[in-house]
Length: 186
Length: 279
Image (cartoon, rainbow over all chains, first blue to last red):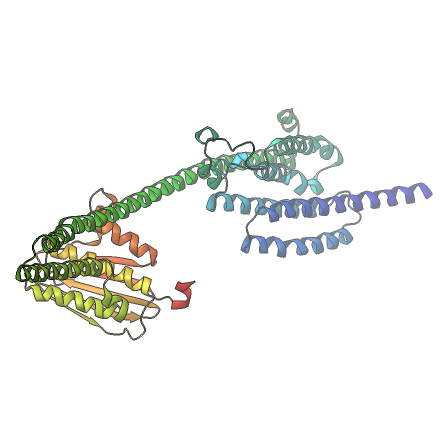
């Protein structure tokens, strides 16, 4: 009896941790996309959607406490993140900032979020319908996309922070065209 | 490995899961590739636009520098060819006084020198007026344009008239000067190229904009001709008009009247308060 109670409290704790992780993951990714968007409607949409998502997560947590994974919350999170990634790409197309989009670290972070969210979308959406065996069998999808996500994050980390913008490209003059400054101007 | 898993199971959920994931991944990669190429295309287009704009700016700048140089050369020629010989002649007459002691001859040469100096003063005044018309400075754009048109009409070659409908508050002197130069340049072009028998200028206000319209019955140009000339290496005066109007954030539009009997040139200038311009 005592063992069963321990198991139950453990699964509650795991479920709580999973829900908190989903929430934390969403907030981090949404914040990253938010700060990479210009001020305007798109930002407002993220600002409005985020509290709604937080409330939904809490609601889902209390509704499905007996589940093993917060499938619906993750699915909603994935949908929101995919939409937010589209916002970023829309902004990049309409107001391009860098000469090559892939020379910016933000692009790689967004791509990793997008690939992970789309890749694991069906896995998490159908997790409630999968048997335990199938769940473990298909968890390879999650592992593969987690690895891809981390590789893309790695690429983002090694990207230079200052990108070659349209303006900076115009103002670049080769130093050899000009005399060097005097060593002792005074 | 994934394919082996899907082939070994009959569950429809597994099928949806496998194909759904593969489909989503393919869509995502396709989208990313599309965005990369599309963004490149957009950037290339923007750079091309920037380059064209820079070329246009360069041409306008060249035109304005060339025009300035031409103006300087004209002033230099006026001073060298007209004022120089006149002053040299006056000097000769005055020198004559030192040599010749005869009173009558001395008076005659002083009188001649005075006449020449008067002519020189008039000549220098004319040069100065062509640089900055005093009527414009003292009485404003309306009077300056009237004055210019009276001179043109006075020459008998063309009938020039103007009417300012709503010009109670004068514009800032800098703005007036620029507009006057644009009108001068347009009139000059009409006199030189159009073979017109009349020019008529009207001014009016519309909201926060000031409009000036010029009509003439000669051979004129339309907006497409103007844009073509602006992009080519000829049409220095037109480029100068464009660069002057750019300073005022104004616009110019050339068109032929519906009746096909005369041409119209409309200038649109946003009205700016004097204090704002002064700042």
